[in-house]
Structure formats: C-alpha cells, structure tokens
Image (cartoon, one colour):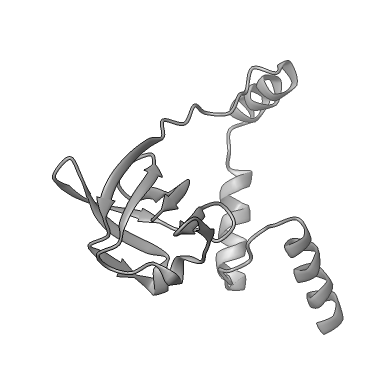
Length: 133
C-alpha cells in the first residue's frame, strides 16, 4: 500500500499537481455524491461545449504596480503592498510566480518588508505573476 502511495505522489509531482489537502473518507464520499447530483442537462451541455471547442481560457487582466512590500506572511507566500493607496495582498507560488531580487531569480522567502518591487498581479488576493525587486 505504501509503495502505491509513493508512486501516486511521484506521478502527481511529475504532472506538477499539488497534493496538499488530505480528506477524510466521509468528505470524499460527500464530494462524489455531490458530483453525481449534477443535473444531466448540465453535464451534457458542458460536454458539448468542450467537444465543439467553445470553451476557452479566461482572459487574464494583469496589471503591474511599483510599490514597497509592507507585510510578509506565511514565509513569503503572501505579500502585502499598496496599489493606488489601498492595501492589497498577492500570493506567491513557487511554480507560477517569477520572483527576482537584484536581477537574479529568488524564492519568495527571500522577500523582505520595505523592498521596492514591481508586482504583476490581477487584483487583491490573487496569485502574483511576477515580483521584481
């Protein structure tokens, strides 16, 4: 059983899938039951949209702001700064967010309060595309 668990995690890592929220058996059972409750018409319409190619990626509306980092949480995975005078947060993901400090690639944990950075993100409490300090 343990070997199968290891190969599952290895396959997830290879596909860059995050396995970070363990669920109880009851929670999995409820999730599956909820999925099966989806009306047949909704499932058929979704399948037709996928087959016809009408499903497209959503448009991203990134904007870049130049601001100083005012707060860091969760070991650099959440940064706070000001955008047009309002306090906002952005999330840092090691795979999806490009972090550079002094022109060199860096980890989010290396960001410090007070650093002046260009932050590209979509809006408050969204994933940052890049942070360049």
